[in-house]
Image (cartoon, rainbow, N blue to C red; front, side, top):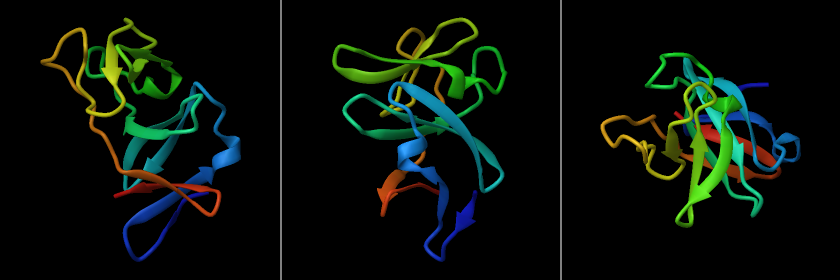
Length: 112
């Protein structure tokens, strides 16, 4: 399901379908976006392309935290990226794009 409203938000899935500590991939405005839900219920969205390997795999990454900051580790070579800033915590020269994300009436929406 992918519906774009007049304000630039794309509905990607039901919030209940996002399992804690795992990710899903959605196509938003022509871009692959990895969406994650942590155990506390917060939702994050980053680009699905791993900048180190070039593979579109971030949605399969390992969700965790480092020093209290929510993170995702690439499933390819395990570089760890902040889910808040997108910056690679192992190599600050690398980053994934971040996207605005919200939950509205039980639906996860990503901003374009």
